[in-house]
Amino acid sequence: MELAFSILLVITSALLILLVLMHKGKGGGLSDMFGGGVSSSLGGSSVAERNLDRLTVALGLVWAAAIVALGLLRAS
Image 1 (cartoon, one colour):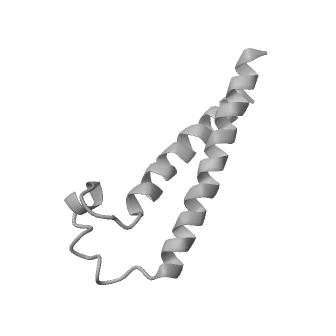
Image 2: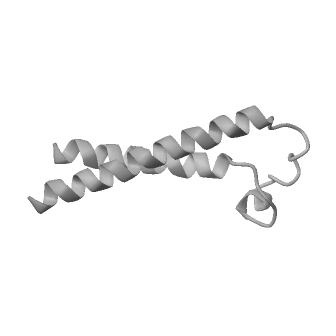
């Protein structure tokens, strides 16, 4: 069971990094360094950004739950 939560934690961590990097940059951050500032006027509807926000929050909750579960399993 501990192995399953460890694998879940690794997968959700990688996906969370990717989702955070996909967010629209607010200026001056890493997204501008990789060209996010250039394409800011080209696309990114508000619906897509809202769905990305929801997906990021949901995945963050799964990530946090995996950490708590691993902590509880290792403590017992």
